Each structure stands twice: as structure tokens, then as C-alpha cells.
Length: 304
Image 1: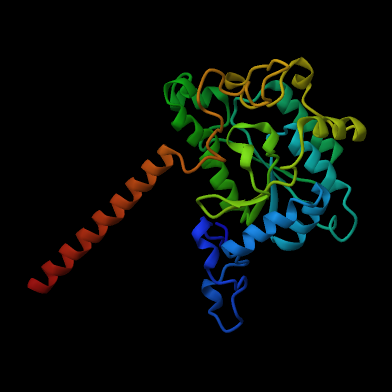
Image 2: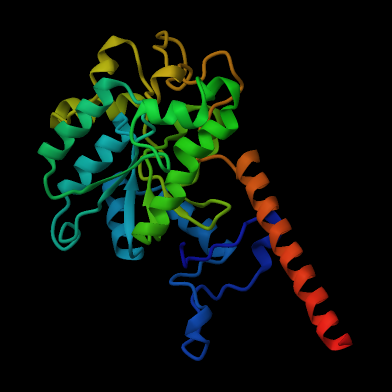
């Protein structure tokens, strides 16, 4: 997937080497495109906190090749898209395309919004990825059973979101992504950095991390950005229809997602899911068995 490398940054890692870029004498075959040490990443996040979202977007375009925006067409993502469309040359010379995970369980209003966005921003391509091997809700149900999100929510997250996201990043050769996540959304996002890296090595930039919901709303109104009609009906954070509800005025904006559950993220922004870990363990088991068989065959040949 990504050829970026950003090591995990624990407090005691600050003493590591400051060399942020590999030397020209190193073997290019093993070099990442960009290398951030822990010290460098901490410094970047400290500096980026002082910039406005447009400045962060300009920095991202300058820094990362193969940059995409991941979006479910929430307000923050739409604001980011509109800001990108208004950047001056040379930042606007290459549009940042969108990656949209069509889970087959989005609201009709969300799918209608996608079409309006495509008309409003014709230079941006929406790359939609569905669950593997299915194109309709009926096919999804036939393959995975009724209400998979209730019978096995880990598996649902994997087949509807995590696997399609991984497939999208691989097929599009994504190096880094812009997200619409903000600290004010609460939950696990409360201590969100502007630049982060997930367990698979994917770089995520959160240009609106410092913004509040009101700032996002004000921008949408001022710039007449298209938005989901459900926002006028009490919704604030919109995902699949089966796991999204309106929120009360005094509730966190993401409190309508997975209401009554401890869950606050769908798996894309979580540490590797249990199902993903299971698949990885199965793959490693297969490799070990293949190696054991090869060694047995080698010993048998030598004995003969």
C-alpha cells in the first residue's frame, strides 16, 4: 500500500535519530517516499495546529504524492472538498479525488447528495467501492445473511467498510488521505492529531481537526456548500441508515451513531479490527503450514 513510513511515537521515542529523510546513498528499493521520525511528527503536529485548514491543505498537497480524500459526504468532508476547489494554482492544478465506501446501506439522501456533489465539482472524481462481490442490498443479504450489523458487527465493518477501503487504497495506490474528523466530535477523536498514521501505515491528515461543528456549519452556509438533507431533520453525523439516529441539542454530534452501544467508530479509523486480526492470523497459519510442508518435502528428497 503506502510507501510512507512513520514510526509509532511513544514518549520515550523522542531520543531517536532526527534524520527525517534517507540519504541518497541508501538503497532506493527499500526507501519510503517520505520518512518522518517521531520527533519530526510531533513537531509537525505542533506547527500545524497553528495553521488554518486551507494552509494545512496546501501543505498536504505539497508534501504527499497520491493524495486522496476519504469521505462519506458528511459536513466536514464537504467543507474540505469546497476548500480544495477554491485553492489557487498551483495547488488546484491536480484535483484531489474522493474515495467513497458505498456500503449499500446508506440513506437515499446520502446517495442523492453524491450526485449533487459530482455536479457541483465536476473536476473531482468520486471513486466508489462496494463490498466485494456484491452490487445490491439483496446480493449483500444473500451472501452475508439478514442484518449482519446485528448478528456480527465486526464482520459487517470488515466486509462493508474495512476491506473495501483497503482495496481502494491498493487499487488507487493511495499514499495519504484527507479525512473530515474533528476533535469536537468527541469520543476517541478528542485528542486527534492533524497528522497521524494507522496500523497499516496509511497517512491520515485531518485539516479540520481544530474546528467546531458551528464553524463547519457557518462555512457551509457562507459558501452555499451542498449538504445532506438529513441535517435539517436533527441528524449531525450520518452513516448507514441502520446505525444512525438524530441527536438532541445537548448531545455530542456523533452520539446518534450506534446509539446504546459502546462503539463510536466503524473500523476504518479504529485499530485493526478483531476480524482483521483473525484474517491475519489465518494467513500466517497458512504460511507456516506451507513452510512446514516445504521443509518436510526437502527432508524427504534429501533422505532419498
